[in-house]
Image (tube, rainbow, N blue to C red; front, top):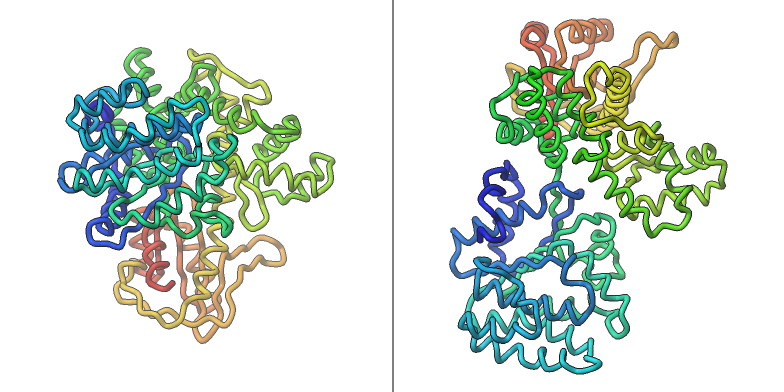
Length: 554
């Protein structure tokens, strides 16, 4: 296993406790039946492959009647012939060698048979002979090859008397096979075998989120409703700090970790790149850890050619646009959204000076390649760090790897402005979300801890929930609940704890309206704010409490 999952990768594996628990939960369906197949979704380099390798490692320790097979479809799917050979050869390799040696002999038609025999797979050797013979023909029957490949896991289970977990990484690459004659129905062939393999569990993973979602969720797809979806999301603050500490020679000040998390959006690859740059600046340049150091590390990694984030962003950008028609127009759309997100298709059309239909086509294509995501008919970058890269590098703004803080002053200001703006945009969305949550209040009794209150809280039924801005624009309330009981609500969705002065302001509005005050703060509350809330019967809720509340009432 160390051949595929080296000890240094194992050392840096961080958190993912919930995802692992979910994988093991559904793994029981393979043991007890009926089997449920899974699909992992997540951004590129978010840690899907690492998660699956850790799952493989833990499963090998805990379960001897199951064999895990790792299949990289980005390598296997070059042609139907190579796919068949690689699919069958990889299964033989994992069953016989368990990831302890080199895979290569099992991927070569000239050496596969001898490699299987050498590893003691006499019965498997008999089963692969028809496939090897078909591959030797001048024009192999691709339909026959694909059917034999997808049937092979069932045959291997019967021979080895072990259940199989097939991990298919970058599964969306299977569509490449459809470009070859006589293999356009490859997914239908897989589906046909999938339904008859009760001792085989498939776990798919892919970075092309929209493509993979289409394969599994579109009603016309043969794989429709066959897989349970699991999202692999960015790290929270605690996991960001845990990973950073594994990369740093010694911990930094506690208040710097939230900044690192906000700049990287909790993306493990970005956390790793920025933290390693911070380590270099601290150890080699002898610069003490500080807010400016974290920002300098982020800017150097993101805007310097040769920086890890720069190279990754360039790769994603080029890979996504390389096959596009209207390349220039798509670049312009991304440039517009890098400056202002949340625009509708008509708003993008006005700035591009094209028809709304043309703008919709551009935006739809950018959604298909996962650069952009649509929410409530408005469009946003799926990756905020990529947004920052596009907004600067595509306009020609780059820096050197040795850029000093004094040279980065203007860019640090730009960085602060963009991330503050994004925070405000997210805050607007969360205010609307909280109002919608309040509309679901229906007399539920909520534990006191959720609201940091002394007693349990019975939720009222509101006749109306709305926001309100005074006529002079000086007073804005994020939510007002009106009914037999009145509530006034403030939502602060930012990377800063709420203080007592903010609670005092909300308390004043509540007293004027004879209403109950509820303050929602993403990052929690200062000690004096908690004390003030307790003394004045103000309900307070942080990000985690809000999620608990959602689960209790929805």
